[in-house]
Length: 240
Image (cartoon, rainbow, N blue to C red; front, side, top):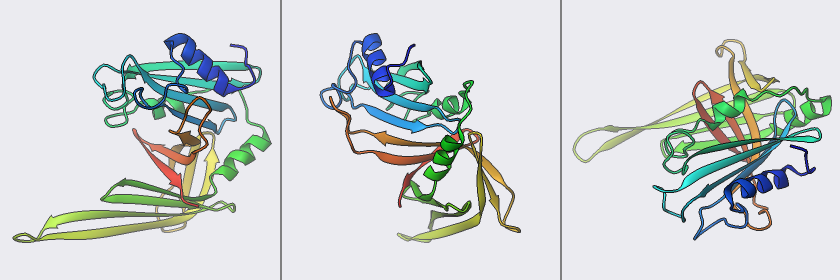
């Protein structure tokens, strides 16, 4: 579709026109919450995503239908992709609790565009900093990326083991890594220093997410670094 010059408006107008609900004006009880995200892909295209459930009220997960609208800015055109499924709380396809096919779908997107040197530098700069993920009370991980192309990683895992009557032994294992990193297309390549292992790669997505939306888009954005290796994705929040 022709671009309005604002992909947020393009995504919002498309969603409202197709679903009959303004996802930003109807976020939060009695309506389901709306989640939005925005970013610049490694290939240089800007995007905006709206996630909102319809056909029910907040908490009615058995009857709610989840709707995802992705708007991609390509010059004077906007590409719209709409996904549908059950509510994210229970969906077996685009679910927050069960399985989410969105990361693999997003990583597969290709458009006939080439990032400018400025866009490549902007994306490369956006990864600089420290990112932390807490997968559960038993596991956590962290990456630090520097402007000089170096990285430091750390991970910790806690394992409880029965140790007799009314006793549990908790063992914490920590792992560390360091080396150089590069971004090749939409892949982050980590090359450990000599003697510290083999290079690994993961599909990369750096974006901002907000769950605080209303008639005017909320200002509480969270920076996210999402890495997909194999079939699963882990998202890290910026620590500094």
